Length: 125
Image (cartoon, rainbow, N blue to C red; front, side, top):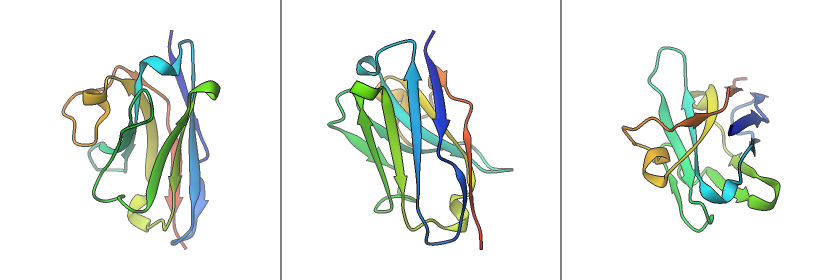
């Protein structure tokens, strides 16, 4: 059974940075595209970023483009989301998910098959 575990969330001031990690176990990361999603209280789930199986392709939501960077280390079965210049509107629970590229892209109408339990990111002064 594929499992995903997020970490790295926390409280940060506006303008600060955090790096989220998503560790995958139970299956090789080589076979899945990985997406990061977030959900703020009272809001719909939003796709943030995704990365292809090889790591050669990435995609970002317009709201985070230029501030967030996704990367993966398949040897460590880990995907990272580096978040810089954080804003209060970035506050949300962040989830990683594994599936095909089309199912993890920001804006997808599909629900990825495998999900982590999430990590809270709070941006506040």
